[in-house]
Length: 122
Length: 164
Image (cartoon, rainbow over all chains, first blue to last red; front, side):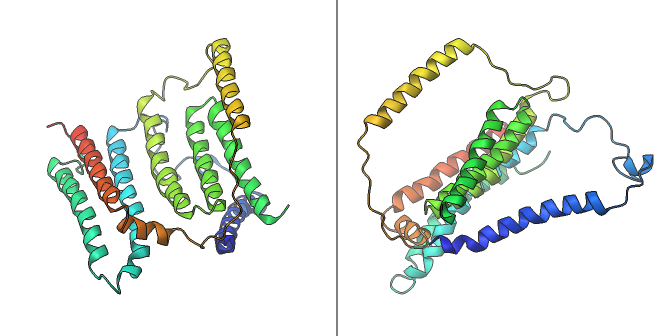
């Protein structure tokens, strides 16, 4: 049963190995001729001002919160989509109607959000 | 030690070590990022327990969503530029007493409970088929109620974001 996960494991190991190899290869075999322009944050770009660790606008938090809500919706869609084929032979529209009710209820919230302007950035 | 155990210990070590970083790190942003690895390690352990749907949920919602929320929360609520954000240990003695009592309770329960051990059963390669079927038949009402809970959360978030 766990044999199904071997491709995922290989992919994970390959991703980790690729990241490590890339970092160390460029560290060891790349030529190093630093000069002040090269070492600036954005070469031939703007000079950065202040620190990178600033307080974020609360708008980002709003976007993240709405993202999680739709994320949870997807979690419910996933088993529905996998099981959908089993419902086709006998009751064709049964599973579709159930999911339509689910989506319709959430659509109310989505319309409310748009009308309220929660998706506007300003 | 077969390969199952090796993989289990890899994920267990990842989970425990990064959880330790979450607790002991002096920088709250490092703690938040270490939590990312804790969640990933827990997802790996769920896979080893044959709970593949929970593992996917863990990756999708905790690693993908909750972590972003947490990191934004850290960056929002604290004044990162002026104050060195650190955590510190306060009131070590009362904390030790409380932890000792709680862990004594837990350990005594663990030892005295008669654990029912079941023989290993053959499981299907994925649980998602059964979960999907049950959601659409036996547990239809909880499934639809979940959408209403999500609706309330969505409207609450929109209401808080735009007061007017």
